[in-house]
Amino acid sequence: MLTSEQDNFVKMFERSFRSNWDLEAITDYGTPNTLTYGQVATRIAVLHEIFRACGVQKDDKIAVMGKNNCNWVTTYMAAVTYGAIIVPILQDFKPNDAMHLLHHSESKLFFVTDLIWEGMEMEQLESVLAVYSLVDFHLIATRSETPDKVTWQAGEEALKQRYPNGYKAEDVHYDDRDNSCMASINYTSGTTGFSKGVMTPCNALASHLKYFMQTNLIYPGCRHVAFLPLAHAYGCIVDFLGSLVVGGHTYYIGRTPSPKILLQAFKEVKPTLIISVPLIIEKIYRKQIAPQIAKAPISWVLKVPYLDGLVLSKIRQQLIDAFGGEFSQVILGGAPLNAEVEAFMRRINFPLSVGYGMTECAPIVSWTTYPHVRTYSCGKLWPGYMEARIDDSNEEGIGEIQVRGEHTMLGYYKNEEATKESFTEDGWLRTGDLGYIDGEGYLYIKGRNKTMLLGANGQNIYPEEIEAKLNNMPYVLESLVIQHDNRLVALVCPDYDAVDASGLDKDALEKIMDDTRKELNMQLASYEQISRIKLYPHEFEKTPKRSIKRFLYTSMDNE
Image 1 (cartoon, rainbow, N blue to C red):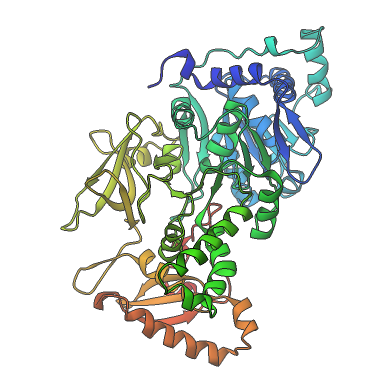
Image 2: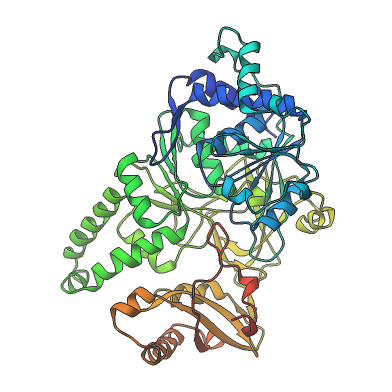
């Protein structure tokens, strides 16, 4: 547990707002809306006045749901610096599910995008005292008998009365809040069913920030482009909290982060660090790099020593320029990186690192900064912060990864049974992931314990490894390997852009897929053989961190 005032989560931001008062802090990308640290701190102070007027107490819950923007960030910071518990709700949740989470968390206030609110009813939110818009903080609904006293305008007037000479840097003071206190309840998007509310302590967030600063991953003046959902722990910890705690400047993208939008933002912002999920890098590789290196004469040159280095160096520089040219590295997490894509990135010495984590660890378990990386590894545990062990390992050293340390959760909110099941008797968190640790301490992930399949003779089959190979084959956008009647079947969503460009009809595509299956099986062990490829009409449903919701596709009946 981090106990010094220097490492106190809330005090970290108090110091940052004071010392960086006049610096630009956050921007809604594509708009003129930019706020300095002083303006963010002032808005936080206004929200604190609103919280008081609404009767919000310490440790009450305040929920926020909507696209990334400056008001989302301000709401989160206002809640945790007030002593309340923030409840970030992924905007991908359906309105009925979101209302259930609001009820389950007993949230007192709700900050939400207007469009999302249209599908909700105040009458069904018994604990909610007031609802505010994330567009401009206007009051949407309230149970207050004096609604004019809980508006944004009333909060501004209250702040003026409290600070008649204006709210200044020296006025920023947040009550002491021990790092053992709960900071947030993060509801997992999950690939295995119903969401659970992860209770994240301030200590888990503070230890992340301390490590980032020690490694110089974040520093005063750093620039970030935030496109991962802030309601997810991964995007929240670095692009938002990490940047804001040191005097960085983050540009928030509220739209769907297509490669085209992102590359334009990278070109304009020139970020100093890029946080992403593998899907973005994989799309860039497949759409821009793979076609380039497959064409003659480049494909021939890549087979010639020395000449291949010249070509690869040029591709590397093109990629670096495309990402803005001033970043130290691209950090990937949230899902496995395709093996072929990673191998190519290592071949061109692209500054890429891969981490591993889970919401229950706020979220990082392991990560090693570039260039101290290992191909196909997700880095080392942070010394002094996290420990890991492999439980019930097989002859290859593969078993369940179990962890403990500064980053672990307090448990699942109002779910003692799930909390008990998630920890071993001696206090280690069960990740549910399978992997091994090599002699140098690098962690390697093999797959989910729950997704591992058993072959006819009891062999362990990791579907993610088969899918990684299949996804690199022509006309395959994404795939999912399932077991049906004790045989492996691959569901494939075709790359329809490539299919249309080649003028293929359904019969021709099915013939190609059968040839693909045969080619794939040549790369697989006998117990991993794919018996059939079945075309799937559209992309698989995914979580916000772009993991396929496997539990929806475990049966052929759900195709």
